Amino acid sequence: MKKINNIVIVGILAPFIFFSCLQEDIVPVPTVRDVKMYMTDIEGNDSLISNPTANKSFRFVVDTDADIATVWPGGERRIMKKVNTETDSLDMFGHPVLIVSDYYMDYGLVKARGFKTALGETGWYTSYTYKASGDFDLTIVVTNHGYNSADYKQVVHEAGTITVLEE
Picture 1: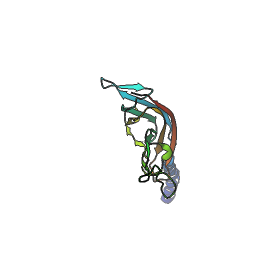
Picture 2 (picture 1 turned 60 degrees about the horizontal axis):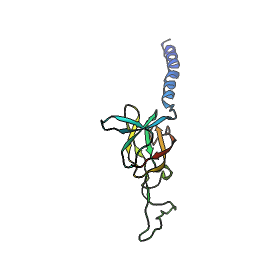
Picture 3 (picture 1 turned 30 degrees about the vertical axis):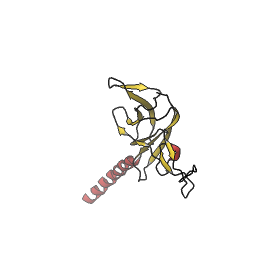
Picture 4 (picture 1 turned 90 degrees about the vertical axis):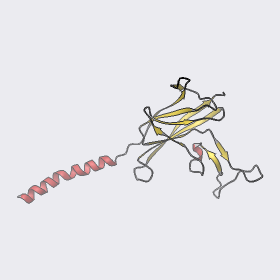
């Protein structure tokens, strides 16, 4: 009788144990709800801005449910030149050799990187300064569950064009 009771208890509890494990493995695809820009005013308070100014630091704030967020502001892209020429240096795959780039189109190339963010009260944030005025494509990459797992979920969010004004 005791043996039958143990089998019944295990038979009842086993589905609950597996069900709880399956719930932990369900990883939602991250979403970006909003991207805002803030600049610190004279009094030290954050002011919401719609267009940043060249050569002035401001902050991108990404409202997302993701575990990690990276900002690719697209403000700087410099290609290494061959010595004593104006010709671009190319790697063995025909890609340009970059000195620095924060354009998302260069994702995966050496020296191309987005800006890591830190989690604040209103979302993931990073500071940035555009060095010149113009229009720049802003891309946000959000990720859930790290880089080296089967649960890796990454979403590339095209946040639009940022118009940077002159000083």
